[in-house]
Length: 283
Ligand code: GLU
Image (tube, rainbow, N blue to C red; front, top):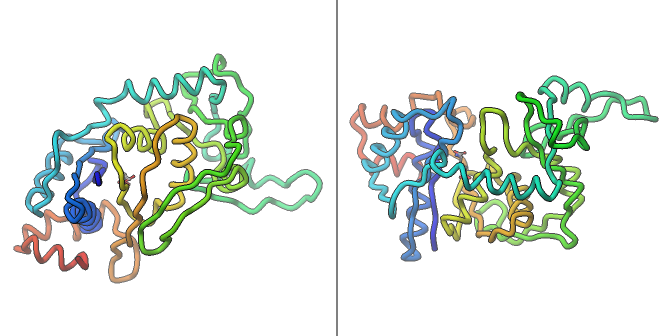
């Protein structure tokens, strides 16, 4: 078994992250496997070396130790570029100049015939893209354009499947062409300042690092349907998935990065022990 923890070094490690890292490490340890650390630092406008260092320090303090060297996305850009190139050559990509507001407007415009504004639909990549720029050739790409994947051009002939071992959705899940078109829509794979989107980089990283079990928060369960599809398109292996519960605050809200009260560094400064943090996370 190979598991991993993949924080974005854009803020402090908080209790929710600690839970995820400990869970992934515990699962690997139980199976006498390996636990890896990856820094999702592809977004150069937000990732900071100080956070990278602080996250490592907090993890070590928690007793989390990782196998081998840290995988940093910023050092792997060639991998993502090569995948984008392969998809582009197959004619599956198109440039998109739609702003968020354009997408809102197009998605809520009355549909032809019924005169009723369409219900807003959201997928793991935000609002489901209405397809305005579909069909634009890559040669028409402008400096500010995002790159989208045209799902309709490469739908899987057979439904795809993945296995989930987490408590909320345990079992086998099927990804159909209908699901992709209706619940996901054409995802962004790259942006002017983002060499690869999360969805693209995560499937490439997990495959290249030979991750056998992806352990992460339940908020990413829906995204797994898109990840399974990207694995199919790029001929990458499909790991097992384990989506764990999220750590919430007293009001039941998810912990946010800016919620410094639950930063591990704050607990440390207040004199908590690693065992206390484990207990607070319910482990
Ligand atoms: N950097 C991502 C996050 O923190 C990783 C998600 C994943 O584990 O796939 O949400």
